[in-house]
Image (cartoon, rainbow, N blue to C red; front, top):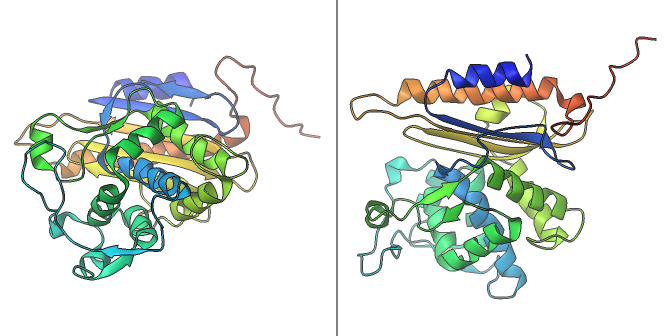
Length: 299
């Protein structure tokens, strides 16, 4: 199936489907609505992770200093009351089991990624601050993505304060971290970027992009989903080809009466299908407009 064929298939899908696909060291092979904004869901945790490591490098916080685990946070809406997370909405009970205790920021950041803990995310965000996350997006060259509130900050949400991403911006941030692990870059020192990659590769929620790959494939990734939204963002490290980026963001409009389960399952399969297609083409990912490499010799 060609990129045109895949575009034609996606044109028949409801809502907005954005894609960025290409090698880590080159312009993209294929983009589709890559600058369209989507509600971020848990992909915003990528920027929070980067902001934490970036802030630690300045000496303003220590990743290994224990901090209180609590469930009370400052709203992004001025003068709004403090807000809390709902345990039943979280994917990680380990953090909740530590309420009232202290845990290092490093551990909380790991849980934020590997189990997508909402409680851990808000704790890290409170210590880092939203301006530091904005600095990360700017340093990565993001044009449209913003992280302006914590998770379940309903007062801010109802006032229009939200978190947005684009496929292009998520790819830029992942590229900056992945390349930054091998040489100095705009986000953090190589050691910090390598540590972030290790956390992303330890992801336990292996859905979406991961489901389109062979089980043993190494990938640094984060996904995110809420009602009507399903995203996946990854750096894939094939053993037999150059690393590549894949970001797929999907937003499906749903009426209040529509159950979200079927649409979410469909979007999850769709992201996995796109991932499988790119995996099959991993040896031939050339920038858009560049000549394709010759087929391998049969001799």
